[in-house]
Amino acid sequence: MARVDAGGEDWEAAAVSGLQGYAVIDTETTGIHPGYHHRIAEVAVLHLDLDGNVIDEWCTLVNPERDLGPQSIHGIRAADVRNAPTFEQVAEELIRRLRGRIPVAHNWMFDAWHLNAEFSRLKISTPFDAHGGLCTMSAASRTLPRAGRSLMDCCKWAGIDLQDWHSALADARAAGALLRHLIVTSEARVLWTEAHLRTVHWAWPALPPTPVLPVPRSPRGHVEPHFLARMVDRIPRTGVPAVDAYLAMLDAALLDRDVSATEADALIDLAYELGLHRAEVVDAHYGYLRVIARAAWADGVASEEELGNLQEVAQLLGVDDESVNQLLEAESVRAGEDAETAVSSLVNVDGLVLQAGTSIVLTGTMGLDRATWTQQAEVAGLVVGPNVTKKTQLVVAADPDTFSGKAKKARLYGVPVVSEAAFAEALGSLLGQRPRSSSACLSR
Image 1 (tube, helix red, strand yellow):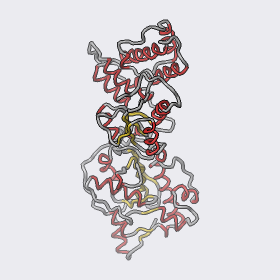
Image 2 (cartoon, one colour):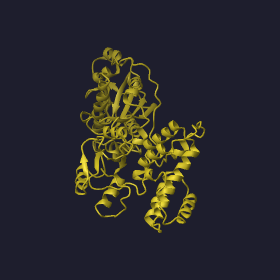
Image 3 (tube, one colour):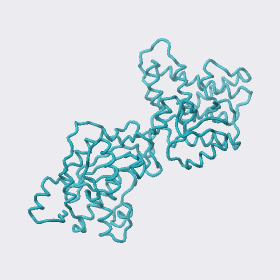
Image 4 (cartoon, one colour):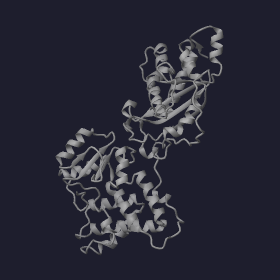
């Protein structure tokens, strides 16, 4: 057990009263500077007793209500946070888990900075100043002088074998293990200060209880069930289902030859609102594919690229290979006939195809920096705007499920939000690297 670095025995006894142990904290954020509106996207709190033993742990993703920033570092997908609570919704739970404990973090100032910013948005003051929490990075620098500053390196020198760095729960577990190592091997290096104990006795506000289920990250390799599997089977039929409205949304979703989690949710919600039974949705999907197959055979030859496009869309729509082959065989008989059908205007046969003059907006931290994408887009004759308006024709996002302000406005206006990869392919085609048909162009 650590000791107090101040006063005499009477002061120590009074100050330590009510101390329940440690609260080891880790946060994953959308960026390093809360002053630039970066937010917490994941938070974990471990409870340790005074000897450093873990007695409880809690972690949840947090909807940052903006884009997720450098996703290559923290690995959080927008699809995972779309149903996660906001910080305001988890604030009461966090306060309960922090009350009466010394907060601990590796590089305390970083987590304190972001927690302060989040609580400040809720008009809640905190004791999280530079000295209000115990920093394992600082403590380890005195006990493990050959170790670097990073949590990974400190754990390595302390003989702690942990994985999944840059997830809040894994990093909190690592920091907790490091704290226990420091307590066991060098108790004198883990000192409680007056500032720490001031945090323990902080007068947190009594917020109304807000029961919120924590939302974990998806396990590595997790595959979302196909959205058809989530479609209701027993919706009362309305008599005349509005298939065209569903197909119009489906067409927008398939523009980049992907169905994001947000788009899948929207398709399910729309099918429910339209009273579409799942069987009717499946029929609509077959009709969509039939138009693509008919267009492929329109000139009497279905090219490898056209067949690949059809199979790609079929997979997204949950249609098996045998059914695709049957569609192709049936439509091959119609080769040379008019490819137009009652729903063909709602089917984007070729996917995303750009043309000079298309108005686009970029959002999120992309693999290629924003300035480079802007330069390439303008060379191709695209119009790159700073903000989404009703005249914007396309939003390119690092993650199509993003909650950035631009993506939110795009969805409000019905502007397609596509992935960086899909945009790169379409831009390459426009620049002449991969010529494609222009039947599905986005034109002004």
